[in-house]
Image (cartoon, rainbow, N blue to C red):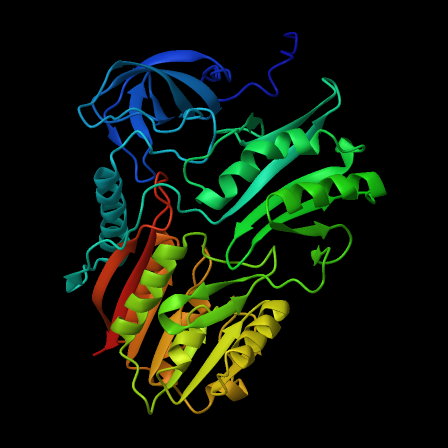
Length: 450
């Protein structure tokens, strides 16, 4: 009787498995083309490499950030042969900070990349092209970001406080003393923030810091333990020096240290003031936001006798300007606190033809009371996962015109398939350059009933 063979039970079939590439390994690569997210693509020994900071035609040395099967994610460490398109990175933290992944591309090339990304998704997924391409909606490429979340972490082993932004491809924190995309009022706060936080008595109890610049400047500190009187004094002195409001986020919702202070932002073309609290969603690019609202109103062409639906309304960013032009706006949002704040914003701006409702917009539109009368036009601005369940019922509301503001071309394209099936035509589309120096694409599309 033959001796039984042991030790083969867990051996993979089809031969030995290829060794995984270790994180940190450096590899020389030739970049073939750009991916839709702006990373360079290279092919080597049966693997596809996605390389942050590389351009088509370049020869680079890349450091591995992670590998999964035959896909390797990496970042550029050195450029041996540069593309003619490459420009010197404007930020001293380029290549380490994970924020601005395409700053090595001139701004006009960034816009062209985003336009291709949108067109490719609409063509490949939905099989359509708009009847008209709108020019990119853009503003200054630097100094535009009015809100930022700063990472804060206590390194117990090194006994030091790390303050900055997340590194590319990891949870490491890159110390930041200057950020070119922040609006100017936040720059001195950003540069002095680390030294101030290091003076606090319980650094291990600190969470993140949020900065905001609108009708006022605000600094919010997330903390996991009560602050001492001495620490609170340090924070208040820092904010007083920078003429900023101090907000604290311990248990419950964020709260201002001085309850009498107001915080918000203006929509100047419509003479509107919107209240805002740290943690609320707000478009970080004020200039492009105003241009986006103006373009949405132009495309939607609301008439004085019309009833308009605004889905995913947030604080009323679109609903309030719309209300100045129509008989009634019905605005719907999934987060109850945002619904309440949007209603307060309408009242404080003396707009009484708006009604706000809370509803789970990830689910199909039910026979809600607010939907029964129907609408002439619809505007929606969903999160990254889109609005598939919502758009499935839009034709039943009777809307002849629909403006879809998207922060994800892939889900916009998917939802376009459903809108076309319902009889809508894609009349116009274009990109919104809300985040210059990044590959993030926002877009606007106009649909009309056939």
